[in-house]
Image (tube, helix red, strand yellow):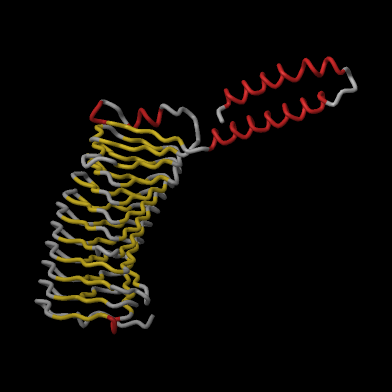
Length: 344
């Protein structure tokens, strides 16, 4: 029932009830009945107003027809309702999200965003979800910054400086997506977090993922697997105070080292890891643990057929769980004698 219909009903009740009430005088019951009905209708109006202020707002954007996602978001003004935006066509714009509760859903085969930062979440924006879109950015396809949180699924992130950029407390959770033809697949900086499951990172001109101080990266497989393959440099680079948690992932056919733990980088595997970590067929070492870095291999690790060694350790370092490391067929040897076993 619309608010207009309620107001019409209210007018009608007044018209048909007031006359007999006046005829009955001050002691008549219809006065009370009228007041009750007016009160009930007012309650219904209030309820409708409350519902309309919190109900999701559903919008459609056809970028092939000159519309834009940014324009759709601006059209709701300061409303805090959840926005569900269906997108058709390729949108040439930078989508800047500083508000929470937004869902972007691609509904056409060519649905996507192309911009210097295709999708840019900042200022603590949360409950943002993105599905079935191609994000093609100059500096970054998807940027999660300033404590913002984004959940993405079925995405293609390509042709950017970084497919994913997470920094300054920003968190990106990515599922069943492809990162390809970027300079860096992922760049994770200060207090940035990326949780990637079922993600393929391929054909980067640099490294599949760089994790810098304070950043963390979790890699896991879905039914479609997870892999970092055929990247032009390292599979993964973990710098001082950055951390890597590989639950189930294959790192292969990269043109340098599979995983490079720079001074102070950390790799931590959980004992319940199911698929484990597979590093194989890379043009350098499988894994190198550099001075002051640490590796805890609580789950199974397979290092096979790399052009360097399977596992190399340099200088003062920490390497635990070496009994879980299986290495074979590496060109320069399987496990360096300099790797110091330290019980976990």
